[in-house]
Image (cartoon, rainbow, N blue to C red; front, side, top):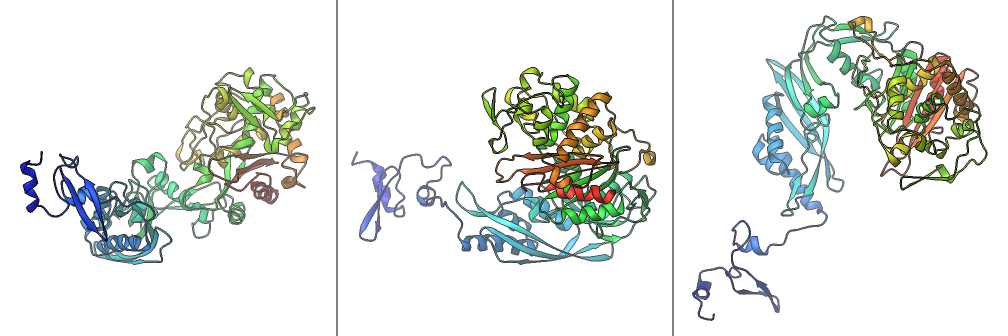
Amino acid sequence: MGKRRRVAERRTAPPGVIGGVIALVACGAGLIVYTLYDGGSASGDTSATAHHEQVKTGPLSAAEVQTAATRFLTSWERGQVADAAAVTDDAPAAAALLTGYTKDAHLTGVTLTPGTATGAKVPFSVKATVSYKGVDKPLAYGSSLTVVRRASDGKPLVDWHSAVVHPDLRDGDTLVTGASGTPPVKALDREGGELTAARYPSLGTVLDGLREKYGKKAGGTAGVELRVARGKASQKAKLSDKTLVTLSQGTPGTVKTTLNPALQAEAERQVGKKKRASVVVLRPSTGEILAVANSEHGFNVGFQGSLAPGSTMKIVTSTMLFEKKLVAPDASHPCPKTYKLAGWTFHNDDDSEIKKGTFKTSFGASCNNAFINFAPKLSDSDLTKEAQQVYGLGMDNWAIGVPSFDGSVPVQSGAQMGASLIGQGGVRMNPLNMASVAATVRSGRFHQPYLVSPDVDHRTLATAARTMSAKTQSQLKEVMKFTADYGTAAKAMAGLGPDYGAKTGSAEVDGQKKPNGWFTAYRGDLVAAGVVQAGGHGGDTAGPIVADLLRMGG
């Protein structure tokens, strides 16, 4: 062994690079001993760095964050796309979008100014010029990037997402400058006034949707603009293209909506008082949408949100129970503190219970187990059928005039089916859906909500397969009025009676300290529904918003 010829190779290898033997490296007063094995690394690299350099882990230092961010921003600003992309954790995607930034979006003279980093996040401002066929327009916006450590080698890199390039971009979207393809529209409220995002900030996404659907039909001509062109994922999420800079105006067509300007303005004001609040107002006798407003304006939660509706779903559940004659409003029906179903133990809010109450009492108090304990008497598909056949939900066929989500009540079994009865599990809704539920109770039949009259484009509105009986409607109105008079909605609805009804809801969400608060109610020929995400109980959060709009609508 001592005479192996490989030992003689030590004279030509740098210290520490010795195939198949032990290398001794001086380090202070001692020696560090490395044992190397024949064959090297899986890649065949037998360098000292490949064998001995430890992968750095742990939080990024401020210097690492600054260095990575500076390299990326400097390379991007200089038009060195390959170099900028190499500083990201998805070089191909970064290179494609940054190339399109100049080639397709026609953006020149890019100036990037970094701000003060917060941990690994670095904000920066962007100034550029859109130059297209002899027309120049300035573009300025803010964005941010986040530096992460690559697991394989510990190298600090920019965490790549399309939003780094522009905050309105989702992954798969692109920036394009050219003929808009879709002519602009001038949207009007029901009284003939013009609707603008400057006046009604929540309507930005609505106006985009109106343009996409009615731009060509309304008789306008296209202009030239820089816009966000949506990719497949965004299109699947029903997001519309977004105009960022208009280089030349097209001729807009005119589209009249059902929005009430006074209610829209008040809805905007009310949601502005809360973080992550959304509200929709309907006319139950027709389905006309009178207002929609969201605290956050990048995504229309009011029309397109997909959230567990909590106890507001008990309206649909109660409809099913009444129709099946499993219970009546004044029937004795206890609400136990806990209820076990398919291995799950369900609790009421604050572990409350109603030992000798009626079903109406439990509805008014929103006591969960008074609903879940009906699960053994139900089929897995019963709630799904009720939602679809009576309330027109979950059929993916609403045509309101702009993109919307029609709710989802999937068939579930066991504990998940029980959770669905109280608006958890797989049930998903938004304020438009829950306003429609209350409107169906108020009118006695489903009227598909709409923002643009079907007379404009002769589209067919969705219908429900059947109408609830007069008795069932009367029972629903009875329990909803009780809730508005004496239950969890009483505080918010005070002074609005007697022709009214309401239901509150609180939906637990994983990772949130507070539940999403829901509230849906009717008063006369007006319905409103709202949600405040991570706000707490619906009666205290969404309730005042809904009640204010019902009061204003008279």
